[in-house]
Amino acid sequence: LGPSDAVACPRLSEVDIVLAQLGIACSARLVGVPGAGKSICSYQVAKAMAADGFEVRRLPDPQAARITLEDASLGKRCLYLIDDAHLLPRHMLERLEEQANPDCPLLSTHNAVERGCIHRGAIALDAKRAVKTIAAALRADLPKTFEAVRLADDEVGERMMDTDLGDRLDHAESTAEV
Image (cartoon, rainbow, N blue to C red; front, top):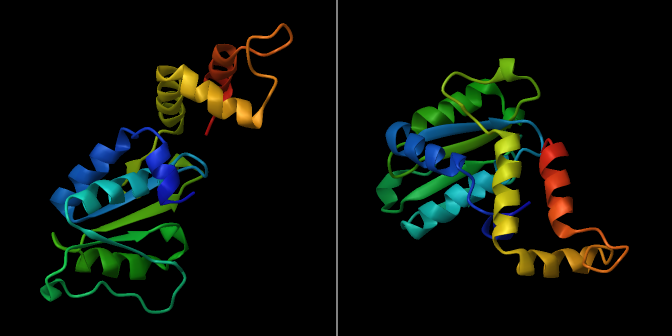
């Protein structure tokens, strides 16, 4: 998922936590299971910081051999975003976090299959809460949601054999893990 998907999704509550952490510590680690919404959350953070005048720079290859944060003395404020940072060698990520500063904060996302591997100070993304947030936003504008769902599934609707959209949302919310 990319930046345009982040705009389409409702704002996840972890966005505010990440923004606060970046403001205090200049770096933040966002951790969650695959599919929990880490990329969406990080792009929502990037969108908020871009609106505040930050340039957003995304590392395209977390396994790159040499990575550094640009010097803030160039007069630019840049948010550095590393998706899939769990692929980076630990010492390299720690070095980048040490380089982070108020003008060059660093946000990294990490897959965590087990809660035991969450780094101290990391922000854990709650996948079930993200599902509930998205479901609530879809319910808030049912006509628009119905229009979008009908493009993908013409068996949702109000005809006799159709599935009710509300029932579909209830089912997804109660069963979806991510």
